[in-house]
Length: 327
Image 1 (cartoon, rainbow, N blue to C red):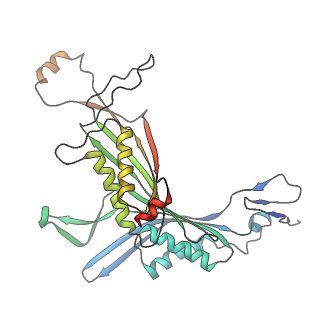
Image 2 (image 1 turned 90 degrees about the vertical axis):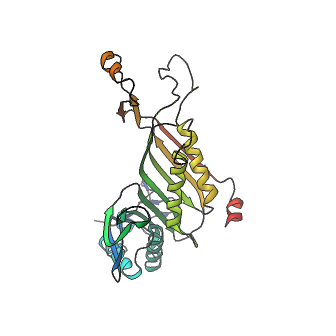
């Protein structure tokens, strides 16, 4: 069987032979779901980090696809081993720093690798605590899985780029408040059935991602926790009175705006907030029972996940000059 000749190489892809109408416009391979835990034993006090890592490499040549020539392939098993060996050599700090380390390794080790993409999810382990308030004791070596939100990062670097692109994010941050939320004065036409809601339950599951304008000297752990806190602050407000939300859109915008105001290293942030509805149960068919309990400060709601409204927005800085002035 004759091997196919790689005829044309361009920025966007490769033609597989002179007369072929086909073009490989995107390609790559890697290892998904590499689970790694790093334990630091400092005397009696131990610290853990657990990541799930995905690696993707894009090679300069496509001869593995076009000719069945595997001589440039860094096996996915080798990529898996690299994760463990670099974790052993350098430890695990933040997902972003480990992703940058992997990019630098693959580009430095293999000159025929043109692009590296790393996806990392961090497992939410927290140290166990006993007692309450300032007297709460943290356990030296016992941890509890606390999935308030899932942390992840995507780090990508091309050989032609000086620095990697780092996008971090959070998902599955489910929040709910029972008041200080309304939705009124929206379009009133023949398609509308929803009445004005002056006081409603507001519940959502937040997904957000943000891009860093620099990777030098960034405290990625601080930034991730600060983004989460900005979201929670603008959703809930202070502990007694809270903060009023006239719409999901407005709450989402305030959270994104506070992120850009407080973290100058972030150049752009997007956020999605789907509605998780709680509708008041219709008690009109049960007047006797309702009359007996109407003095109670209680209400029963029906949780409705689907269908659900979906609200999203991306907020960018208007110019790089603003970012540079803050760095």
